[in-house]
Length: 98
Image 1 (cartoon, rainbow, N blue to C red):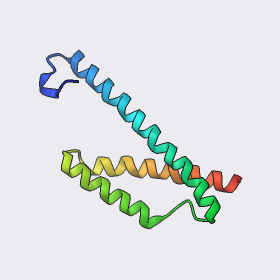
Image 2 (spheres, rainbow, N blue to C red):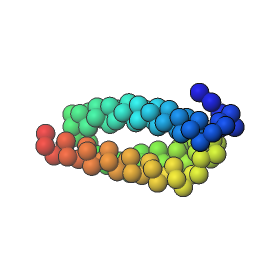
Image 3 (cartoon, one colour):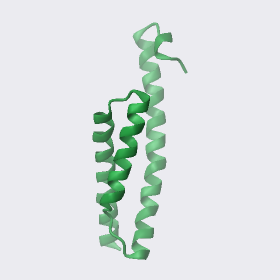
């Protein structure tokens, strides 16, 4: 693992980007496993797939974390809105089918 300033070539940068991408996919897969479990719990409690107050709380936390790390908060929010939207759609489909 190199820091950006330690990358002397574009290949070095590409290698590190690939490493980070793999870690991101692994983390998103882990997050998705919890989304998958959530619909089962929501089914048992007859709860809605979409919980607006929770969505807002997640977005607020993501924006704060992005600002702390120097990631553009607008980009982080846009990504998480997509992630949350996919999760809601997935849960709605599972709840409807079961």
